Image (cartoon, rainbow over all chains, first blue to last red):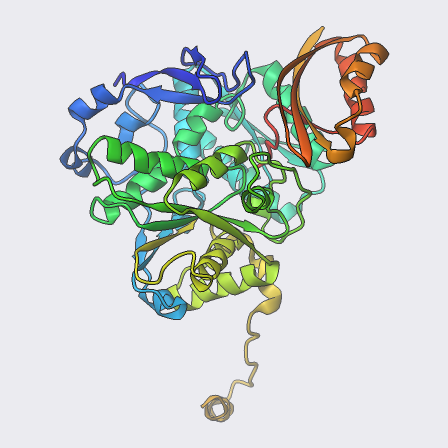
Length: 411
Length: 79
């Protein structure tokens, strides 16, 4: 499976051999995997993909691994839910939810990117993987490393609540809590990645890591019957997933797996951390870092590594745009998705639902075309975000008469 | 000796100050600008520093004290 040509700088186009490198030596631009699309076109087909197991590796020609995948064999192929009740609520005709809240094994889209990054780490001969994370990424790296039998370090700020750490430490990585603010943690992790040369999944393996996000886009196109949605709304944190969903659509189109039709992609951020949306609305190419202040912690990244590429992908699509929403709207979005479709998402998903509503209400997304809402994480991990705004149980004595009375009062 | 890479974000009021020049005189580090973008509101500089690790650390602290946001070239790595 030699379909990867090498790494290319996204900025200056300088080419590099495949290896654990992520930054161009010349311009410091990020490196990206380059494929031999002619070779891929000669082997890939809808039938070939459909004949494979239902996991993210069914698109292996378009992923940067050389050997038979052994990691992430149960990740991906999450449901594309036809969301008719939510569609009625939002006043649109055709709406879907691509639901990575049930991704295996750690219930977020990170299981896709980590599957690819750790597969590549094993191919490159690493015995230790690492990441810096406050939640979903650390969960996923810890779980995948455990199953792969790799040593694992996770780096977290030292003021992180214990509840958020348990979802990672249960898999027995080495957890390191760093004293200082987020800027200090960022800087130290970059230095550690540089010095220790482990497989830091979102630093030196970032070119491979981000490729895993394409499978979200591949899957939903296949699940729509080999067709792209007209509109898709995607949350933006570090800026990994949105440009890669766009790239997935471009690759499927280029390879003739879907028809070449217009599509629009929209970025969703919380108002308390909206550096990309601020730049988009200001018609700027430069992203001004912000200090996050939102309940949507999993997307609270004040200076996103790939924010510029989110802007580029949004502006490069047909009428793409983006919006931000308040914490109150985010909670309403979580509750709306739960009560209409039975899906409990985290605040990142609530953000995407609320932004979709805003884009529809403001006429950015028309009501009569297909729309996909990207749900990337699970609400059971972040119950504190909604605990104050959900209904309390009715408390009654253990007597039928009391229940009868309650039931009558509810009518 | 160490070679480290940073993104510096300048606010509008800092853009006119020759901070990288001053840094080169105050600290024993070699500065090498690899990229820069400037708009009406902000300036972003990709900077490589060559020198003793502690000296680089102090230079970056001085720059941060001047009101420049200093981040690793990877920007935010906590996800």
